[in-house]
Image (cartoon, rainbow, N blue to C red; front, side, top):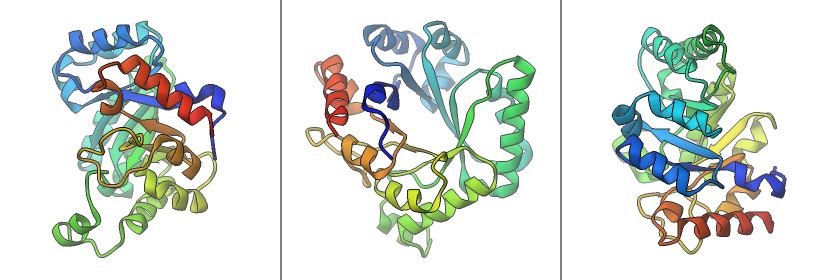
Length: 243
């Protein structure tokens, strides 16, 4: 499933991997063509929910990537609170289990309703893209190939009522064969051919990831570490639109 090329720029999520709200907003204001930004653990712990309000005031879409993973009651409480922020996407670890996932989903919806905001789509993290097949087998003692493990986690997320998953782009094509077309796939670890793969182990180029079935691409350092990030972002959009 390839998104309409005219909307490619809305399918690319750029992480705000900086330690302060001031630095984050400097990036946002310097790149007005980016409509979708990711706020992760470091920035959220540093800046708090006030940053989310600043992003919304600038009419930006927000991927709140905090990867909640705890007992069901604690995950429900966290998701109820986060649901009130009015973000578009937020994450929990599928490995928390179905009871926790269902509680998180229900709580996020309730939190959004109490605040009068549109509810976030809850995404399940299947397997971190920094984890290699050998790490999965040797260190984590999981006797499944990474693609099969991601599939099982994705099916669990779907059965628990989540709207989608975060997965490696290398797993997207297989997931598309077993999951509904409206089940959202968000792929981090995407690297253009002209950029270093750095600490990502299971990656594809942006165009390859979209062709494999990804709905959204999370692309950070190939854009933010480039000497000309505006041009790098546009280059990625152009390459994807040329599919």
